[in-house]
Structures are given as C-alpha cells and as structure tokens.
Amino acid sequence: MSKIQDKVVIITGVSSGIGEATAKELAFRGAKVVMAARREERLKTIQEDIKNNGGEARYKVTDVSSHQQMEELADYALKEFGKIDVLINNAGVMPLSPVHENKIKEWDTMIDVNIKGVLYGISAVLPFMRERKEGHIINVSSVAGHLVFPSSSVYSGTKFAVRAITEGLRQEECMNNIRTTIICPGSVATELTDHISDEELKTSIKKQSEIAIDPANIARAIGFAIEQPSDVAINELIIRPTIQEL
Ligand SMILES: NC(=O)c1ccc[n+]([C@@H]2O[C@H](COP(=O)([O-])OP(=O)(O)OC[C@H]3O[C@@H](n4cnc5c(N)ncnc54)[C@H](OP(=O)(O)O)[C@@H]3O)[C@@H](O)[C@H]2O)c1
Image (cartoon, rainbow, N blue to C red; front, side, top):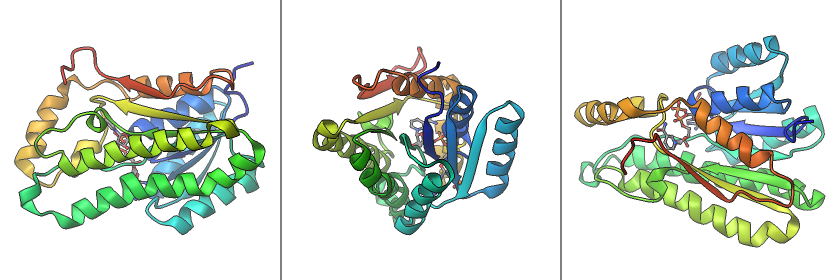
C-alpha cells in the first residue's frame, strides 16, 4: 500500500498552480484531500476532476489570512475525515516591486498571506498533531527564501521567514513526532507572476520564467516527502529547472 494511501491532507492555495497539481497527485495516490483557496468555482472543478479519476477530495473556501477561517478549515477536515495527517501551507502571492515604489498594500498582502497564513495554518493543526504525537507540516517557501534580488526584498523576506518558522517548529516539535518539510521551488509555470502590478517588471519576470517547469514536478517532490517512513523527515527540498542559474 502507498504510504500516502488514506492520509488526510489539508492543502491551501489549491485553485491553481502547485496547489492544484499537489492535490491531484496526492488524491490519485490515495490521500483524502481537503482543499482550500478563495475561488470556489475552481475548487469545484478540481474536486470533480479528482472524483472522476477515482480520488477523494473535499473543499472549503478559505482565506488563509484569516485565523478564524484557518481554524474552521482544520475543524472541517476533522469533521469530514476524523484526523489530520498532513498540512501543506502552499498559498502564496508574489507582487514583486522595488522598495522605493512604496506598494504598502502589496507588502501587507504578502505578509498576511505568505507569513501569517502559514502561522495560522500551523496554529490550526498543531494541537491535534501534538495530541496524536503524529503529523507532518509542509511549508512552501522558495528559492527566493534562500536569495534576494532587486524587487524581491519583501517577497524574499516572507519566504526567508517561512524557512525560519519551519526550522524553529522542527526543533520544537520533533520530540512530538511531528515532521516538517520546507519546499523551495525555483521557477514553476503557474499564475504567480500574473499579480505583479509593475507592467515592465512583469514582462521581464515572465521572460525569465520561460524556463519554468511544470507544477507536477513540485507535487511529486511533496509526495516524496510524505511517503517516507514516519521516523524519516525530509526537512528541506530545493527543486529548480535544471537550467536555472540562480
Ligand atoms: N511558481 C513559482 O515559480 C514559485 C516558485 C517558488 C515558490 N512558489 C510558491 O509556491 C506557492 C504556490 O504558488 P503558485 O506558483 O502555484 O502560484 P499560483 O498559481 O498563483 O497559486 C497561488 C495560490 O494561492 C492562493 N491564494 C492566494 N491568496 C490566498 C489567500 N488569501 N487565501 C487563500 N489562498 C490564497 C490562490 O488561490 P485563490 O486566489 O483562489 O485564493 C492560488 O490557489 C506560493 O507560496 C509561491 O510563493 C512558487
């Protein structure tokens, strides 16, 4: 039996990109997937697709920047499936811009979604995982969580934070048999660059993203981390297109 079979996995940011690919990969491998994002129509279509391929998935419309909604998401997973084995904090936004442009609203959104969303997710599932002395929290950071480039100051700041939070959590919770994994993708072909408001920068970043790999590759890496025996923790994975230099 696949080590993923019957695991209950909450995934945020499932309405496109890496989240969608991961929900499909894990559901097709037998996981019971609880999908979250804000765009309900997309979640519905993805759920149908998974169902038509013999998988099991539920969804709950959730804004990860709301602590209350993240608690409700965890409660929903428990009500539907009775346990939570894995949380994948994947939802994220990347409206890049140089600091001097003062895009305060975009900074706030990145901090709310990329950092607070991850913390709220952890907070919503940790009590149950500590009680069971079992669980796996997977946080999606980025290559931009290892390095900074002009216009990535705030985005990289949030992704460095995700790595710091995850490593701290690992040290605090490893004795409770809770595994943590940091996923650091390089360039992946998704909608992430669509929300860059500076048109010139958007065009340039999209040009650099021509080397991007399919999100299914990140989904497979996440599956690899989950399928390890419970006494083995894959703590961090960096997955780039082969030809990506930085
Ligand atoms: N693509 C890349 O090259 C790349 C590289 C490194 C890291 N990453 C990271 O990978 C993760 C997934 O991004 P992606 O590339 O798959 O981009 P994407 O296609 O734009 O997907 C982002 C997802 O996040 C969700 N989301 C955004 N704000 C949200 C909120 N407030 N509440 C709930 N969900 C929210 C979106 O759903 P709704 O809008 O429907 O809510 C969407 O499903 C992000 O953390 C990103 O930083 C991506």
